[in-house]
Image (cartoon, rainbow over the protein chains, first blue to last red):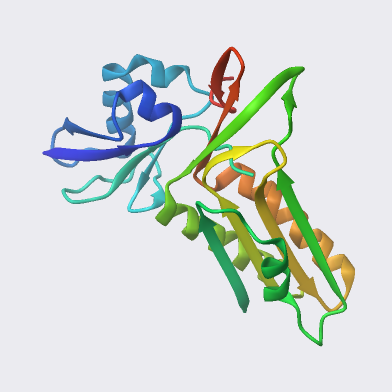
Length: 80
Length: 139
């Protein structure tokens, strides 16, 4: 399945766009998607942290990604 | 729960944030104002650029407010955060918390800014004379 992923901050710089599309097997977990992204964009692994959000919630590693989910890469936050 | 949240790409208004939490039954209002500092580790900062994953940021801000109401006898809570380009001295964040007695207002306000910095999906880039860096991105 194809997943559109939102990127922010340094993750957008690393991935080269504010929205990227990746092709992953059905029933991919958040952890597997992170591995896929880290292989495609190795600099993500160098960040202090690199989390995924699914439908605007921080995703646990074992949560399943479903077609149509809103997925985002969350690099280390620095608000305030 | 009296709860006010705002993300704005235009200058924040300190008085309006405070007004949101005023009430006759509160005996204290604690306010935190985060501003743009002119230097980081000795390097002159020209500006900060903030961006937010807005829909999720508002959800996380609400979560912080709800936890503050659970943990302390808070009457009203307001959190405003800027996005966009800010120059030195500009206000990046305002948190105002009111309570019947000051201890709850102080504690909840400190909790709110500390937690915001850990969990709300907002990012800032520091722009120096000779380069720029996404804050906290690398270990």
